[in-house]
Amino acid sequence: MNIFTAQAQFLEATGKVLANNKLAPDDQIAMSEQLIQEEFEEWMDEDPGTVNDVKEALDLMYVTAQYLNSVIGPNKATRCLEALHENNMSKVQNAVLRDDGKVLKPKGYKKLDLTDIVMEGVE
Image 1: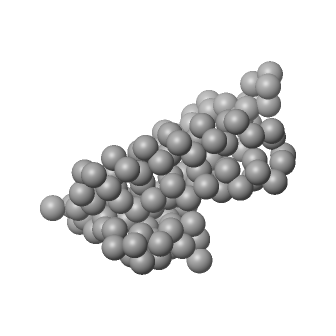
Image 2 (image 1 turned 120 degrees about the vertical axis):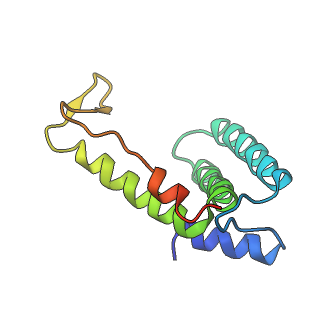
């Protein structure tokens, strides 16, 4: 089980809609956006590395998954995450680091395009 399938179970259990080539209702998407904001603020208020910090970071991931499940559904969200990971791993070879340690896009980096996944089957 991944974050998207786990969160999809919650949406379904609470009578919410999973996107299936159509967006969920606007009010559900708006609620997801609001929850992301609220959970982000709660996470930012925690001391890094504490148990509550970890819990709030997980809550933030969960409501972000809810947003993606409402917009593109768990299957597409999983595929997008896999594509993002593959794209990020492409930066590791010949990695260029910023002073703070962030991995920057190396020469020849190919920008991630999720269009094919997101738009697949859209009516």
